[in-house]
Length: 114
Image 1 (cartoon, rainbow, N blue to C red):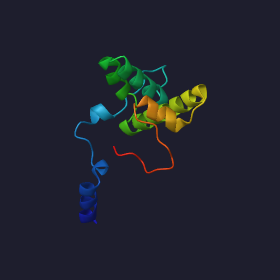
Image 2 (cartoon, rainbow, N blue to C red):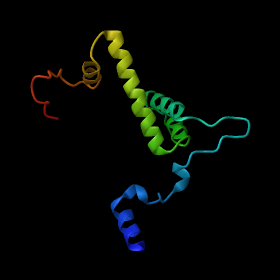
Image 3 (cartoon, one colour):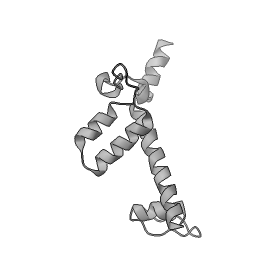
Image 4 (cartoon, one colour):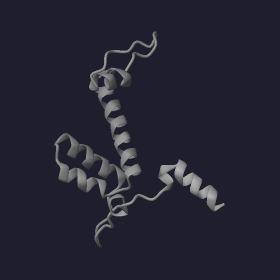
């Protein structure tokens, strides 16, 4: 059984503990304050990236686990694309490709090469 566990740890990097747990654990909220949620962390992180504010980015990554932050950033991206698509009266695909500077994609042919 121990051999199987060791094999799984080797094959699944997420099953291993990070060497520096202090960077990946969220901070406990001071008494009287509620903890930050994943959406607050994602919004702060993205705004920090946009404003090139490394202190804001560093603070946001301590609020939640990395996987939760990734989920929050993904959710923020989805909601932003949907909101822009409605505002522009375009499809989410068109808006997403436009934001990334990709050529328009017609659904009739194969996907363009990366």
